[in-house]
Image (cartoon, rainbow, N blue to C red):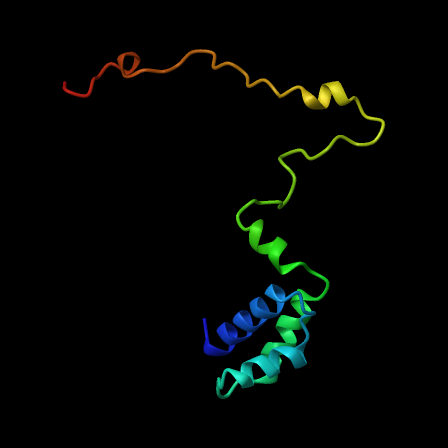
Length: 109
């Protein structure tokens, strides 16, 4: 992570901790007050836009909790048979398992 990303991240955390709205101007002000040199304004704009309308404390408390795509198959369609959708699919049983004995040789022959 670059110095610019770290500075913008820490500034955003400070603003979130103080319950102050995160804007590019406020991020710039904090970064300049910390005397971090050579930060391009694009970083503060990106962080401000990414965190706009989001609760940073809530994001931090839910790290690693998932929340991605639904499980395989997803939810049943409206009007569909919910009981059939809730029942897991049964795997077909193997007809006959093959073993080395059937092939006429063994591991230590």
